[in-house]
Image (cartoon, rainbow over all chains, first blue to last red):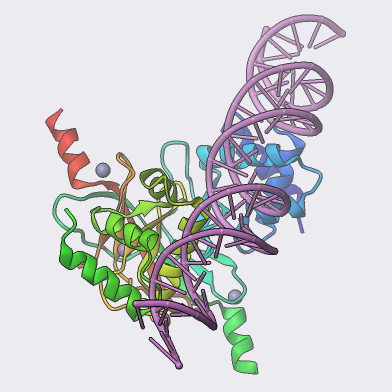
Length: 148
Length: 148
DNA sequence: CAAGTTATTGCAACATTATTGCATTTAAAA
DNA sequence: TTTTAAATGCAATAATGTTGCAATAACTTG
Ligand SMILES: [Mn+2]
Ligand SMILES: [Mn+2]
Ligand SMILES: [Zn+2]
Ligand SMILES: [Zn+2]
């Protein structure tokens, strides 16, 4: 359920990034925050059929550039989008958390609280960031597997 | 430079997986083994213009299913392909090595020798595998940055 | 080695996904 | 309220991926 304070938060978010507070943008933010997992462009498209496809692409790109959302790939290589939890901005994304791809329900989970272990690289490589995916069964799907 | 023993190795690889030794397949294998980084479908397509686009898709899919190559995503979300180093087969891929995406030259490196650290998950998630990417500057690009 | 069998290829058509240009609308600033 | 600039929606186009099918080439069998 979307609350008034959510709306205000979304409006503030758009303000902060000098993006106009338009109906399509607010609806995309509401939709994404109402979901516990990341959402793919195709899913967003069918969830909000009255928003033009092109507009949706442009909104997603703008939000990503501004650090309002981040992109995560699912097992098909399709981009899924999730709201950034912490204070990401245009120049600094801080989405170095673990992602989980469920092989059953295909949902993509942001595990914001899990820190990544240190990863070492061969000489010469200068890492600036890491992306880590785990794949397997999510809690819901592993529970179903046991129940059967 | 492709050697006779490479050709024989490729032919053996196809034999092993009950794939016919055809010209397009052997050329794809040669091309991939001659490159030090993973190669995207678009790149393969322009590197081997005389192989039909559809054929290339089918070859890549077949090779991936058989565990001859594995798929790695670059920073644009485009699939890149690289030969599997160890003994992957249809049912068991063993490509749990680190991948490096260069933000400058966009090349994707398979760091086959780097083992992944242990990664812990919240309760309920049952991981079956991990995919880890580092992104930053590859040795060539970081060297160029210093030289300037 | 020749004939038969089947996988693979290449082409055309189609489907899906993403981008561009531009006129119209809407939000914010003046 | 008027002005200005950003954002939207539509149409056209591009890029990417899939399907069906006839022709071809690889392997099998006698
Ligand atoms: Mn995330
Ligand atoms: Mn690899
Ligand atoms: Zn699941
Ligand atoms: Zn590089």
